[in-house]
Length: 316
Figure 1 (cartoon, rainbow, N blue to C red):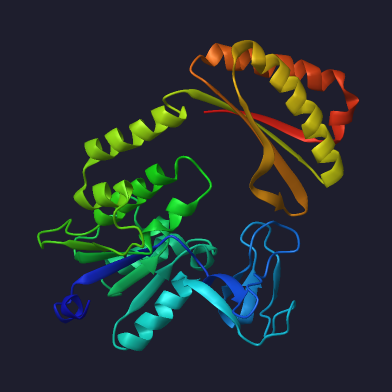
Figure 2 (figure 1 turned 90 degrees about the vertical axis):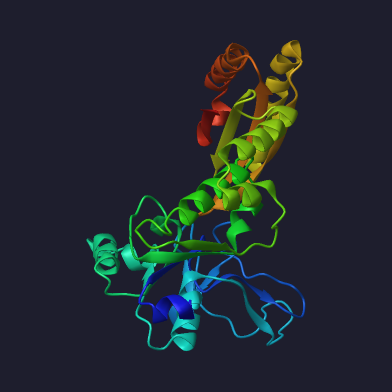
């Protein structure tokens, strides 16, 4: 970065995270500060705020652990705001722009930041995934992907694919002009195939690895998957409804020898005081899943107990 700044070339730092830290936890007992309305941890932001990125709930930063009273409580994992602070400290003369959800809320701010960087009014652009998608800055000769594998820990079978997409897009922002470019990927899992193939820009190798995994686990596109997401304000009613629904689906699915996965809480089990549970079914014949869906919809329509629940079917 010092070399690029001396040459008056530009730098982009990509982090798939916003806020100062990923979560706030107690070093003594391990308690993590969570949103009272959602099943997720609060993220620390500037000004001493702790914010839920799902429902928008905010509260002041806690100074002592609410469970054990320990003062040793702090944040883990850097966010875009913290990266910006570190850059100002280490490169005080550098002109820095930050682009994430918080800095692009105002009308026109997205275009203003990009225009300023394109006009060379800043030396470093740090931001989330919105800075890596399709932008062409000929003076950018260095791209840094920080904590590149954060998205590998998502509760989604497509997490490796999304990590590969983000990294190939990020790497592709460097060296788009006449000057040669370089990209550096920081990772805690450098041997993972999505990291390796993204670094090499090897789409074919990634496809072969990912498809082997999808075929082994019968995930799309190797097979079709039907998810039944059920949500409601009353957790007890939700559990009772999912129990009835699961037994009905299992009875139909057994004819086709399809295992039913769940019911289980969704990746985020509660959002804004709404509880969420899900069922999954996988099969290579989409018509069979469609038949199960049609029969399940009729069962739901005939049972009034489901009227207080929101039920969503999704194909992939």
